[in-house]
Image (tube, rainbow, N blue to C red; front, side, top):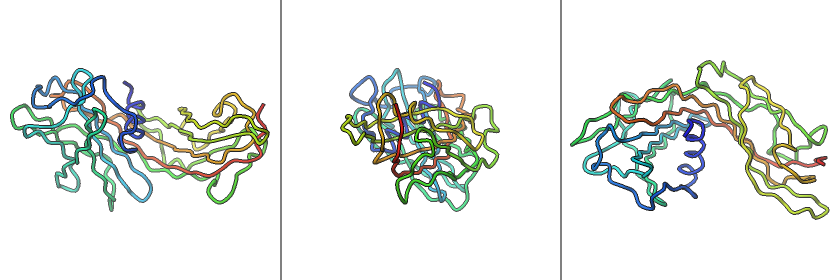
Length: 259
């Protein structure tokens, strides 16, 4: 699983109440039954506007989600303190999460996987990419009409983004669109990776797919700058680290001129 796919899975599943996510087994397994070297760990830090931060962790063995038991714990180091992540269970998946608003953001956060009967792994860290803000278009006040009816330009302040080798910029569109003449409506999601260069032209025909839609009652853009250049403790089998800055804007589109 790629780091970006992992982050998008975490954003969709853990942050949205684990909707629709499951491992190959219906039940979790107990972490205490497996050596540290047999466990995959997935760590992420999501930063939204106003320094709202979500710390997430999950553990897997042989495609099965692990529930931390027998003295196994996962914490994140923040300002010299080890703060435990809270367990969430659903649909055969155990995730560990902590939500906070930070006064100041660190450039990286250490995740401490401590174990009472097996080797601990406390040297994993997630790197947090630079912050950014979406600038245009403003979709929230009234229906936005693309100038040519087919495209619009999304812009953001870069704040020196894209420095790290493993940084990516991903756009996710969540929309509900229709045609006033009676074309069946569409309620869907489209995801694309783009260059982190402060501007991207959104091709609505590509995003919406086939259909002569002329308006979207709901059109949401989620922009994700992610960094997978962190570190996993060598005691773990494998996994990934993903740090992300996430911004969003939502409104409606009108006056579309799609074939």
